[in-house]
Image (cartoon, rainbow, N blue to C red; front, top):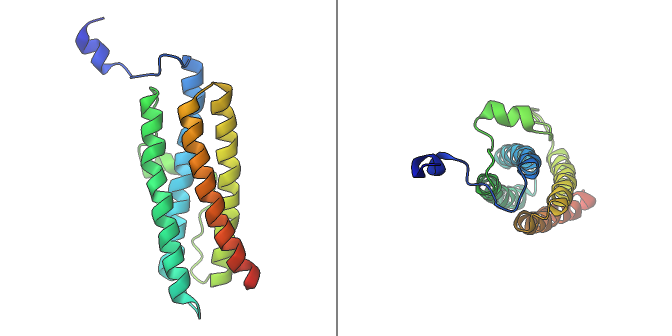
Length: 167
């Protein structure tokens, strides 16, 4: 193989089998689509929240959105590091997302927070499934990243749970 051909070939992880790379990257692609979906929903609710606790909820959702958005680059870059591909467009995100959008124009703050709580719980489940898949293939680096994302997602869910429990 020429040097030019080697540079154009996917990087790949030398110790991961091609089937493992394909499975892990498919899982990461779904996670990335879900994370983008959750980011947009969180920003939507951040922009449209109203009510007595507006400032507190507005700031909390902005913090959550920033944390969620920060995950996107790490997920995509991990897929590329091991030789795979990731989402390429809004349409690609829509084809792979499992979390549902919410376009309701008249959603009460309580329902927004309850929905985000449920979405973060579901994302935790998706992350755990991806962790299990990566562990099966001995992809230690990806499992390590996922553990951090699980912790962050559980923290967001905990905060939302405490608020929703008061409403």
